Image (cartoon, rainbow, N blue to C red; front, side, top):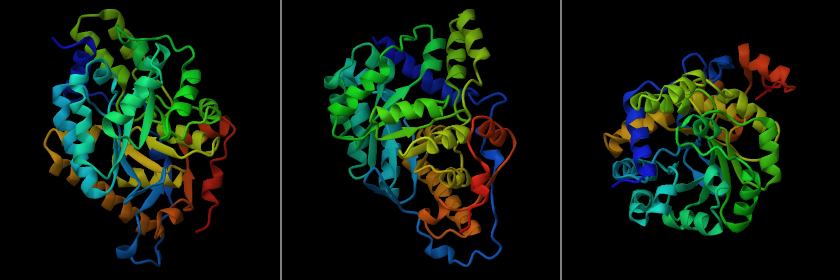
Length: 366
């Protein structure tokens, strides 16, 4: 009989595939970011270099597939399809929370398939902050890394989701202290990632002090895990948690805002995720200071149809990135990081109120 963890993972996959789990009114904020078009780019589009080195690993383009799943039989094919595609394209991927396989070693194959299919790609393991709070130690995190021969380990933070789940684990005491211990225990970078509600400047500074190797902002704009839990509660006729999911459906910090807050508050590599849907979004993320951009939901849909479909979606994204770089006159990722951008609307208002300086992006000169 499947464990409660396995059942929950199956629910999550099915809901994300079948239901509308996007924000109702909130957005990623990328619609407020305008790149400055160059009618005279003065570069050859065919020679644009998309490669980037992050975490001492060379990516053919600054794109990763975010953590999606693992720990249930259905996830074996999903992770295999994504891994095969990122290996062929020279990208990277994360796996979902490895808790299920730590609880039940028979499920390790659903994660290990990623390394089997992607021997050279950058792979990110995954352990939850709530599990650290409940007592996971160096033993468990090292097992997670070894399971997929990971190049990095993500510690995911999901207080919003846990607060809405009927079986949620809402004791968040000492998570930061445990993250410090994980950093000291591992010889691979520890990346702390949110799961759809963003990371603030204040939290980012605390994480940098804790010694983490990178931050994945995972802001509002992509999958709403409050929405996912809303559908789970609705199916179970749990009116209280259904209402919580509906109330907090759009809760969090939009991705573009979170990205700027973290980039301007730390010296860490930052991954932008949460509503990254095309190569133009990737370009905007890099211009705002991201080292990598991550996408998840489009890859889940594609992965159910096999590696060729995943490769197709990622190839579109890569070529959109190249096209946007051509249109702003950037022949490399390093040049793109200095491209001017105009921040407007709610994104500019938020950042100004919080003491950041969105106008500085517009003053850049290539």
